[in-house]
Length: 200
Image 1 (tube, helix red, strand yellow):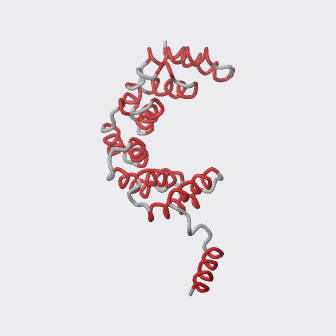
Image 2: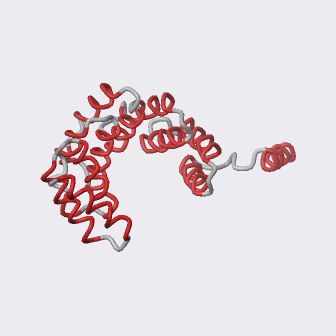
Image 3: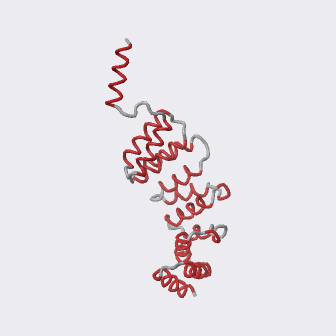
């Protein structure tokens, strides 16, 4: 009997490498595969982790973002919705809104249920970015007041674009000045000067 068990284990070891992994080890392996540019394999590994631990919202969220990377928004939507059945989850909500970008009315409804106070600054900016991606530039700009002093250079440039699209010219002028002052890139500075001139 022991010999058969050893033989069976040896067969699995050779034929199915990784069968002994815990769900968390599968999650870690999925992260490594994603970092190596293999999102398809990473998603397959996450699927196994979810089979073994279906109530783990974090695994479902990770799978959802992998599915978005693979341009499978419908599957991502299902993963994020399943994650939210286990309780409130900011990343699941932001992911769901992103999965719904092609259906902006639904996507914006999801975002409106997400309280900015419950988010960290990076998540708040992503929330505004999703409004902009759905074409609601006034909504994107309206949330900038609490973030404007701490924006990264790239976030400031994006905020400038949203402000111009929303016809918020005072904000656009102010942001253009900040972009021009902060950048050492001549092309960026020239573009910011032009944006500032348009805003005046």
